[in-house]
Length: 361
Image 1 (cartoon, rainbow, N blue to C red):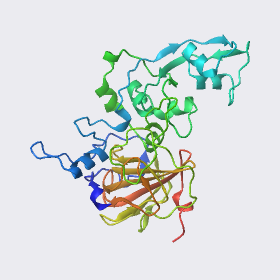
Image 2 (cartoon, rainbow, N blue to C red; image 1 turned 180 degrees about the vertical axis):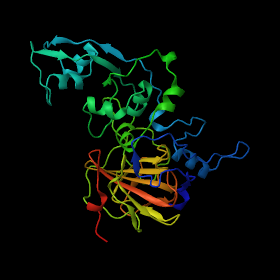
Image 3 (cartoon, rainbow, N blue to C red; image 1 turned 45 degrees about the vertical axis):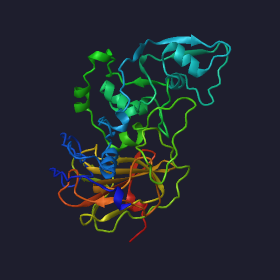
């Protein structure tokens, strides 16, 4: 495992604890991946390090969730009605009207299996709808329109495993603006776009074809996994401490405007970080500046664990891990001033107090 570790340079921020989420925060420069010298040959270790931080070897440095460029060509749909004909399906009606089948179902209080009857009148909700293309991700779509991905999740009632399908029509927030492809200022959108752990957990999976299946996790992927990843079938039901050390910040409110969505554990630089339970690595990188080196593990059953401020990361997206596996080493990356681990547990997107899920010590 040690041969797979890549390092993340520490960032010293003004915040004392990176797990605290202030009411407003200015962008912080993020740690960058080690880059091989142009005059030196690339080694296998260099290639792994670059891939682990989202860089695709060969010069394309975009993250997995932006590997597929999104064209902001959403269609504006006006409110109306549709009379069901024999043979109609909700999916087909969505395609004909331009509105998403999910949005039509919610507008008409339909529930699975969405049985329709000839002559039935359906209300078609007005809105701006983006048709998902192959490989697009929720984060990429939200970024293209300059909107919050969490809001897209909410208004479309998206649920686990948060994998979009090709052809799906997502209803966008009111502030979204469809623009011709050449008019989209990608750099400006990227500069104003921020991510949090929930965004990564729910919006980083590339869209699949209707008949496509998510990739199965493997012990150590030989290549960067840029497709949707299958979540564990079930959660083992027990968590363990990711490392030993005193808890220096607990879950919940810390100060006016600051809330800790997990706990912070003090640790010496380089202390091994262990997976809290069996699962699949959903993310490993440093794209959320406040947390620096960050690892997310999907445990199945709606459970996910997060490990922030890592100085080294020893796993990659799509890798299967067992409870106790060394996934990285503690550091002071992100907005902290001393080595520590920010540890979160989330159930169905919501942060829960890790102290209530971990064994007493």
